[in-house]
Amino acid sequence: MSKVRPHRATPSLDMTPMVDLAFLLVTFFMLTTKFAAEEPVPVDTPSSTSTIKIPDTNILTIMVSKDGLVFFNMDGQYNRAAVLQKMGTKYGVEFDQTEQHSFAVMGASVGLPIGSMKQFLDMSPEDRKLVKQTGIPLDSLHNELADWVLESRLSNRMLRIAIKGDRDADFPTVKKVIKTLIDRKVNRFNLITNEEKESS
Amino acid sequence: MAEITQGGGGGKKGGKIRSKKTSTRIDMTPMVDLAFLLLTFFVMTTTLNKPQTMEITMPEEDEKEPPKVNEKHVLTLVMGKNDKIFWYIGITDPEVKVTNFSHTGIRKLLLEKKRDIPKLIVLIKSLDESKYKNMVDILDEMAINSIQRYAIVDVTPVDKELIKDVQI
Image (cartoon, rainbow over all chains, first blue to last red; front, top):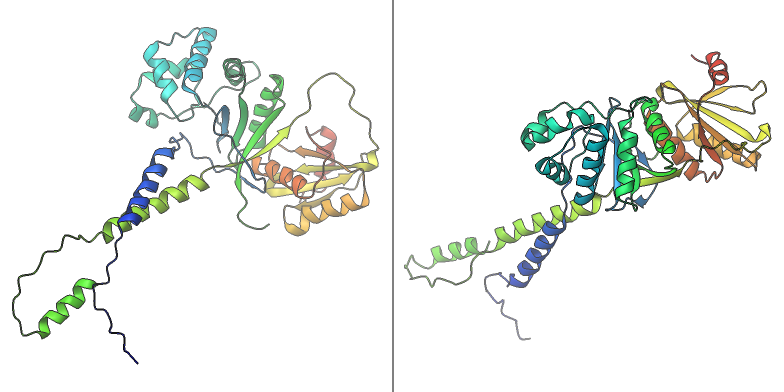
């Protein structure tokens, strides 16, 4: 029986194709990943068994924080700038080109009355994170959220509206948001949840 | 690993210093490790990032007369503080009971009622003390138990009176 002599070579194998592939994938994922902008308040969404995924584009997010503050966010830079300008003319605040641009490129949600928006947009992005945002006014007499929703829908007809509420947000605030939407004839909207983890 | 075995073999051979042939290969292992680490990171973050959504459609607010239903078919759920649910059937002098969001609580109740009452209509009412989570949970239960007819409505003073007696 011929004995096969153990081939004593260094156990290295050519990893080049694998590395090529790995880096290709790394590059692909790095370029396609969109990092979520840092939100002014953390929101812990409740879980549900729903498996519908939220669309990436044409979405208006109304965020309700734990303290009952309401924040506004929307995608699409052109639409954002247009909405800000319209809101400005409605409330008598003039926003210049730089302010409109910084609002357009800002990925995070904002929760400020339109009156203090100008001052907020003039700040540097680092300073903006330190601002304690007070939420968008939502009273029946002074409802800025209704105007945000209205102007956003006018500038983007395809817009879908999503409510991203914290699990511990109190119900009256959420009810006010829903009431505002229904008043503006938005009868169909989405509630953002995350995947059910524990089996209840 | 390959380096270690080579070093051990060299010691046995009488310590003769040989001019090592510098190989053109470089050890790519750390780089590959890093590449795969990054790859794993990006794969994980991109797929898990997308949140779920629950679609709800609210009825239009118009002056039309709401449809009349038999009160025996109506199950009212009132969500209160600390994840409690008060429930009763009908409107004339109902017996109010308390349940919770557990498996044996609301899920069992809904399944039983759905079996007993084929034309079941669920009214969801939330007290001001309840949380947003409760609303999402109850809508989720509707989906799980495939109850098609339900509505989110405001709490009436009558409901508050009914609940007052049961509150612990």
